[in-house]
Image (cartoon, rainbow, N blue to C red; front, side):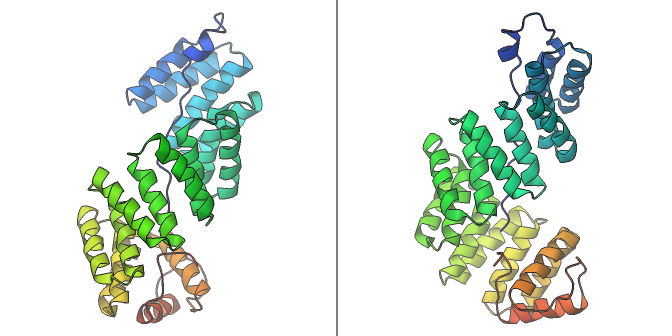
Length: 311
């Protein structure tokens, strides 16, 4: 299952800057920070823009302002625009940990995992005591398939906050991938005790049940997750995968096709890549469903091959 970073914007408190550069006018930057904390996204962006464009700022202060606006843009999904701000922020101040962290988030979101890892390492070198940085790096290790390293960082996050259900679930997934099924199940149980409605924890536990030889228990979790998130491709595909394990091929195919109907070309490309890696012939990896791709998926379902994980 694909790991996604939670959107976290690290907006630098401008009061940290203002105390050392009293001659600078950071009024609009301060207003931007207040607007962001109040949930007024566009007002925050506008205020930081005025601060950046109209203020006579030192390089360090401008870097902080650009970093704040860039992190907000990344948090709302405008990754490319955010990257422009964050790159400039780091050019002005290479020691800006918030900018390195934000650029790592943008790169992660765009699938540039190696670059994201480099940025998180830089940020951690500058701010080694911030758990969100370890969570971001752990998720990146996991996405790169480096699960043993991910576990080290997840442990560190959970030592700081034992009630972080996202870190708990993600640590469980790394344990699942490494075959540490009992540890994984303990993590999912703990995560669900904290957040009983966690769809991700239910789905990860569902597939772990199946891997442990208990697909019927997995189906219960998958159907619970699907009831909570009926339009989520991961819920549809997890249920479909477990139906394939149970030998219910027609229902499994319908489930995968329902997931494709929501996930679109991107999900089809992921399926085509996995089918190819597992020795099936889906044709070109072009995101188009039908023909050879459908035939390959049917063959995969018949053999209950694993469509949930990259080989």
